[in-house]
Length: 168
Image (cartoon, rainbow, N blue to C red; front, side, top):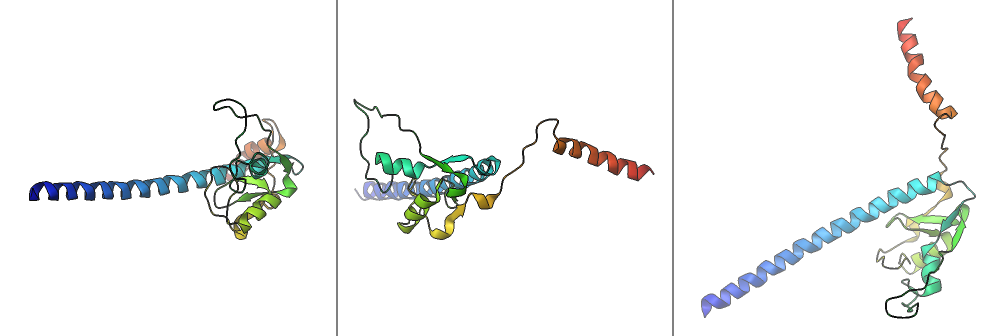
């Protein structure tokens, strides 16, 4: 019986160690996912014009009750069906980005949720602070040139100038 008891304890210890390793991996994956979302959101916001609309998932969560502050109101009729809810959008000058998780939204919602130390987007458990709210306008706007635009020509002509200087 002593051998059986010790083997059960050994198995329990092994399971505990595996669980610990899995939790570390989940935290690592979550952190990397949030970082990727942040960089993608920054890039997306930089490519928008100053007057473009930015969707606010936190506003949507408030309206349909599915967000952290909303309480999880059930939507739709029938089993597993949800009604289509259009995501509210706000101008880029009134929008922001959370540096902690990469979610975008209107500055008002992001700051209100930061008071509660929440992201406000359904399913995101990332704690937010006022210092993590980045204004979308502060990220700037990237000028996107077409294939034959002035920036493309300058990029092609610059090495040619350097090559000509080197020969002469």
